[in-house]
Length: 277
Image 1 (cartoon, rainbow, N blue to C red):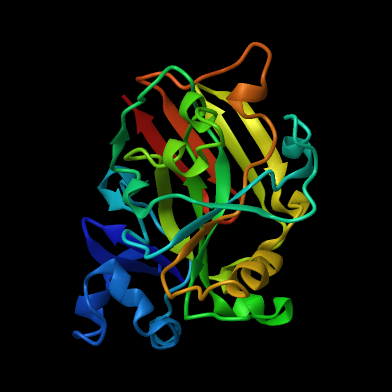
Image 2: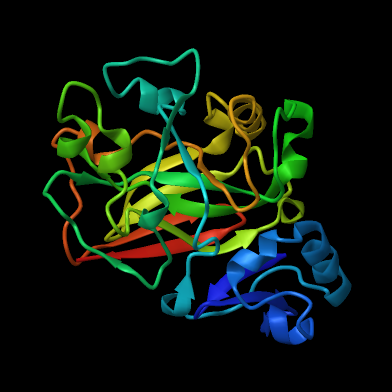
C-alpha cells in the first residue's frame, strides 16, 4: 500500500486511482495523514481488503509530507562506508545519531529557501515507525516499520561546523530541510527492502548513486539501537544516512542553488522533486 498526503488528506491508490481513505472507509479512519498511525494494523488490513497496492499518476505539487507531524525525527550520520571515508572521521563503530527538528519536514509542494551558499544535498531512505517500540530486537524490527519513503537531509555546512562542537541538528533543520515523499510505501511492496538503489540528480547530472545494502548500520540495527535508549513512537521518522557524492566532499565543491530542482530517487518508491529558492 502507498499512502500519500493529498492536500492534507490521507490518500491511497486502488487500481492506479487515488482513493480518499476517510471517504472510502466511511469514517473509520480520519482524513488527517497522522491518523494513519493511531491504528496502523487496522489501516493496513483495511488496505488489503480494498486492494490498495501499487501507485498511480499524481501531480507531486499537490502532495504534502506523507508523515507531516512526526513527534521525533532521528537521523544517522556517516552511515555509508564510502561517504564516511569522504570526510575526516572514518568508518564509525557505532551509529552517529542526531535529530532533525520536526518543523523542517515538508513535502514536494514546498519550495525550500536556500539560507546560505554552503547548503548541501543528502538523499536518504526514511523509515516511518508504525507502532510504539521499546527494546526491539533486530529480528523483529521490520514488524515495527509502517513504511519507507524518500528524504533529503538538506544541510547548511557552515552552521553545521560552527562553534565548539558540530551543530548537526540545527544546521539540518531550516524550514524545508526535510522534504519527504512522494508517498509512504509499506514493506510488503518491496522485493528486498534491505537493498534499494538511491540517487540524487540535479539538472540531469547524477551526483549520488548507491544502494542501501551499503549501509554500515541497517534498518533493523538502527531500530534496535535507538529503541534500547528511548521509545520510538508510531509516526516517528528515521533518516538512515546518505551515500557518497555530497557537494561538500567534491572537488570543486558543489552547493545547491536557488532555482534548482533536486530529484531524489529510491528504487520501488519513486522520485521526490524538491524545488529550491
